[in-house]
Image 1 (tube, helix red, strand yellow):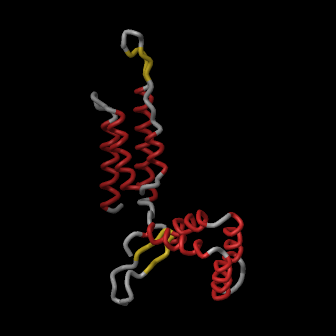
Image 2 (tube, helix red, strand yellow):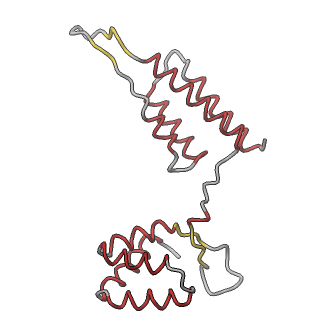
Image 3 (cartoon, one colour):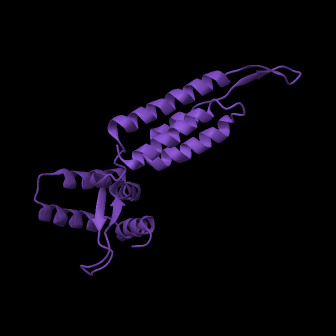
Length: 184
C-alpha cells in the first residue's frame, strides 16, 4: 500500500476515534469528514451525501430537558461508514478521479513544447449544447454523432446542421463553453 493511501487511512481512523470523544460535536465532525472525503474520493463522491445524511434528532420536554435522542445511532452509523471507507481504500486503493474517458485534452498554446494539456469535462460541453438547442435540434445532433459515417463526414454533416440553426445558437454554444472553461 502506498504512503498516500496510508495517510488517508490514518485520517479516517482519527475521524472514527473522534466519534467516541466525550465532547463529540456531530455537525463539526460531519463538516471535517466531508472535507477529508472530498480530498480522498473526489468532489462528487456519494460518500459526502452518506455522511451528510447522518441526522441527529431529539425529543425535548417542555422544560427544555432532552429525554430522547438518536446520538448513539448517529455515532454507530458514522463509525460504520468510516470503517467501510477504510476497507475500500485498503482493498481497491485510491479512486481514479481523473475520468479521462470523459475529458477532452486541449493544448494550451501552439507551441509543441508547451506545458501539459488542459482537460475539459465533456459533460460540460454536452450540457451546454443541450441547454442551447431545442429538443429536436439536440436529437438531430445526436443522430449525426451516433451514425456510422466516417469522422470527416460527421464533421461536414454537423457543420451543415448547425448552419440551419439560427446564428445565435452556435455563438451562444461557443460563448458558454469558453466561459465554463475559464482561462485556456
